[in-house]
Amino acid sequence: MEAPPLERKLAAILAADVEGYSRLMNVDEEQTLATLTSHRSIVDALIEKAHGQIFGTAGDSVLAEFPSIVHAFQSAVAI
Image: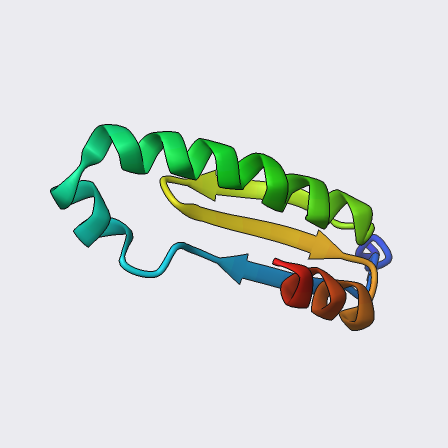
């Protein structure tokens, strides 16, 4: 039996999180969550503008896939 053909695609992955998030949560959880929510809407829009697609989030982190390293880099610089 022959194996199915492999599907390959090039992609660049951006992984980001908030520096000092645990410390900020310890200091003021309510304000930190409000700020994170506000900033995430901006970050999400910047990723989308750079042709990225978010495929994972957890707490303060975001994982996004881009069709090229140039797009990922432009998004990272904007963020």
